Image (cartoon, rainbow, N blue to C red; front, top):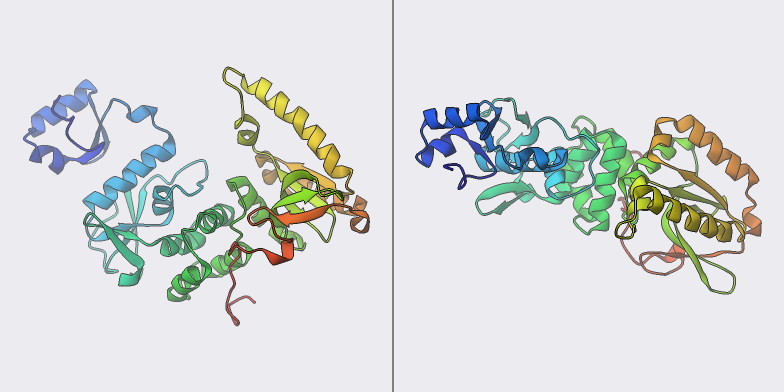
Length: 347
């Protein structure tokens, strides 16, 4: 097989450089041994269809980085290479930013090119291939992705220590008049590295318009005797309300070997009911939602407001600590939030 020593995705010129003739390549395509993904871009057919949509997109992004010397992988494609949370469907093309802001590369069937200033501080080089630093990638995503998806990228980058608040503020300065920067500024104010999933971050964006106190993610709940009760996804201490974002993955994450999805879900729901009862016994109201509820935000908001109307925060007996450092909520030791400088836009 003459294609085994080529990368997973390869260009026509890379293939011909190995000694394979154009006729042999075309025969392989017609025989189904090689798949043409775009004009002049190919993959050996074996295994490609077994990859998930985002695995294929990451392969596309790595290939774009290798084959496009005048541009850098950026935006959602760069975030995907960092394994940051992504929505269900990837963009149809690898997203790139031209290095010198001149369109020397033309858009084609598999690459989308952005234009933008690229100072040397935003670039790092790995084995001769340029990449953006994480802070630049995150700010680009905040401007370009849908707000909930962008907040998931930002939260995860903070939580994993890929970026810091000062990194992001500095990267944002360069883009102060770029399209989408006003939304990016709002997201920087909402960011919290303690959120643990795409669903939690998207939920935070949806709820940001509800004129509520900002919730605290991933809070440890203790009873009056100092016994641990639960770690909850969200807490509004002023309101006496707990919020739980329940994606299906949470139910199946701890499934036992050989256990069906239905059995695993039923087991988790039983434990969940017992856990929720102990939380309610401490005087807290609990609101749960799933991904599908975010498509009906008015219904979720009504359920939340009903819970706040029932809540009696003055009667809550629970004690709360931060999950990342076990300190009181007002004394978190980790830089999970971004401290924006005085005079930052939108303040």
